[in-house]
Image 1 (cartoon, rainbow, N blue to C red):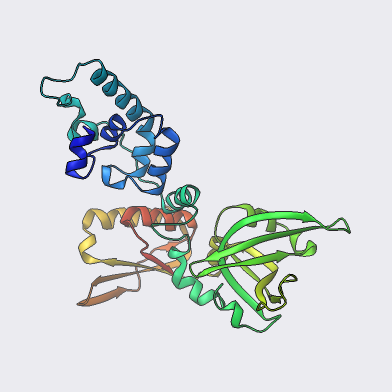
Image 2 (image 1 turned 30 degrees about the vertical axis):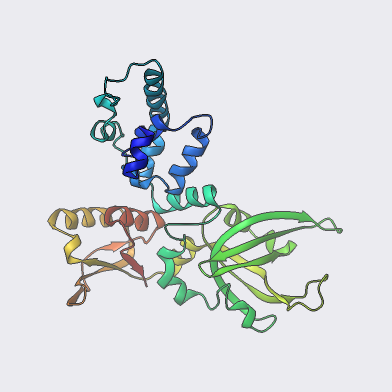
Length: 318
């Protein structure tokens, strides 16, 4: 099997891969990391399906290897029919694919970085309106400048001072880079701040730029950091500031069934914000239906539901 697949250049399924690898060298933890990082996307099925069936695929592979070692393969060395790609594909459970947050969290945990996107991608247009700085632009800003930045929290930790107070430190990361954030005792005690910083969700923070010289390297340029004053979940901040939403769809991606599903989804989240619908044929025409008669609560659950329905971000907050 391995020699044949080396000639063809790929395995047909997760089950076939598990039947060919040596479990002493490629164990469950390794295969799980490969699934979570997207390295096995070409083997068919979604990552949620592959993760759910991994134990069964390993058992399947172990049985086939045992049969081969016992000489129970066919006369011509072919595998049983049950090992074919059509048969093994039928063994995948009927599960929805992971949402963007789960997919990216698994990529970061497996590889240490994101592959298929960034947690801030869905908020790109909103961040341009609500933030006045990025991790990249901080170095060019004046010391003590008041700024607002959006990003994800990395490496959160707390430390007791000599006076017995508690400070916190972490890096905020956006699509352009990362900078260190310092949280002094008084801001750290604000209600809900710790919870937001430890949530694993993107945050919106405000604070002041602090250009700090490395004590061990007088010749180095000062490093831009942030002294945090306020922080909240980005989804909560955008929810509080949103007064309307627009759903943008290319006409080739929709039909009557999709439109009915869209209406049903929007009606699940009633609220104060009017919904407009923009239909377009890329490079050709665009029409905006400003009054749909629908009003929604622009929650993170709604945004996630729409992304699952259409496979990408389709909603913009205003």
